[in-house]
Length: 307
Ligand code: ADP
Ligand code: NA
Image 1 (cartoon, rainbow, N blue to C red):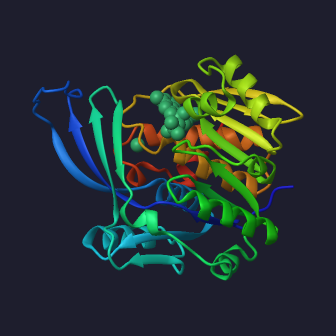
Image 2 (cartoon, rainbow, N blue to C red; image 1 turned 90 degrees about the vertical axis):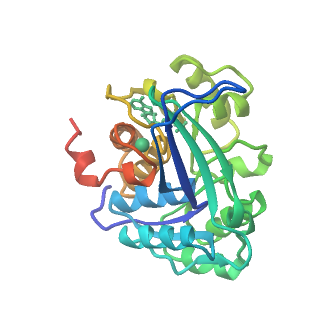
Image 3 (cartoon, rainbow, N blue to C red; image 1 turned 135 degrees about the vertical axis):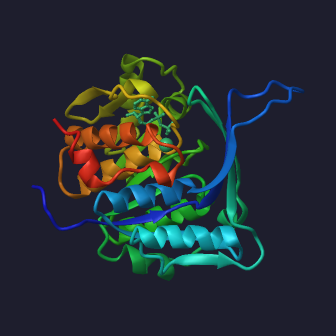
């Protein structure tokens, strides 16, 4: 059953100011190159997924941490413009706002180094987690926040009757008892290969890896394959959806945009393939534009691409 009531998503994750350096190509060791431009743009996986959910029409409560600095203030204002509930946004007294150094080549290839700063200090007690999870449809989280906090939040979500979507990026080992607590797992081919312990380059290999991960007790597994698309693995059915063919400018936040569009559609009651189709379209628009949060499309833009 689908519903027009906007779903409520609690996003726990990182906020970074991205320092976006555009270069013709990445320099080799010891080489000096002339770049095109340097700009500051809001990012961080938590922030990106929160914005993606909000632009798809979700009510978003964000659990995150910034520093007492101009970057933190700029991130806060950007999130406010997207209508995101920032009641649980923390400000660290010492650590700077997280930063990501993004080197973007003319080819669209990016290379990213993250400095966690305040994100590493994100912490809540159980009561502070229970309040925003009350009445929420999904907890959406990644691994740019401290793992003990992510596990604490998953447990709190389950107690609150809230489903959990985990995007285990950047990849790190997870406890065995976490997998059955996840309604939805979204990961890319590199993470899937690492977790499943098998190569993942083709859709067939992704299906095999997805089945291996599903066997650990997770409800559904989606493996994104960059420009090739995504495989959706559930007990009842497995589906490969090709990506849309678009002119790539910047793939930053493609996975986060996919995740946000997917989870809002799932929370609205759409089936997994329909929800993934929205994710594929949202992510295709994202890669045609520069920047992380700046490139995330609205629900109207995504619907215009639906068949
Ligand atoms: P991540 O950013 O997490 O590594 P992917 O690179 O797998 O994630 O991208 C996520 C989704 O974004 C893909 O499943 C695909 O739908 C879309 N996407 C990524 N790159 C492209 C591209 N070059 N062209 C079209 N769609 C893309
Ligand atoms: Na982008």
